Length: 171
Image (cartoon, rainbow, N blue to C red; front, top):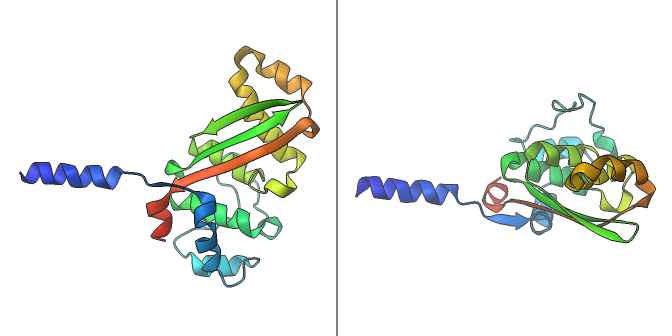
């Protein structure tokens, strides 16, 4: 009986409660005194390390001043538990809608680092990353897609991040 109870408890702990990042965005922003000030973010979320440099793929500095409050909130939601983040987005290239699902935490991080969470002000670099992940779905045609498409032809139709709601709500 005790073994069964322990197994049930472990299974309950493993349950991920996925929520759309947009649902938790107001709660994250409400905890920050000044959404433009990085020190306010650090004070509101002491358990989250706001890295100065990308310790992963690029090794480049993170320009926190250039990041919008939404991007900073997405960082907090991501860092709460990177392994449980899922992203799906759709881009339009010359009238063709391409849906992409990202379940890998490193790819999700690179999307954030590249500025893909700032949907209103996507840079060409961000569009290039969105296109790059989309082109990977084309298999043997990946290089052709990348050669024939410029970032200016990429239009972001939707961008959604799902996070573990239990983790984010407990911050």
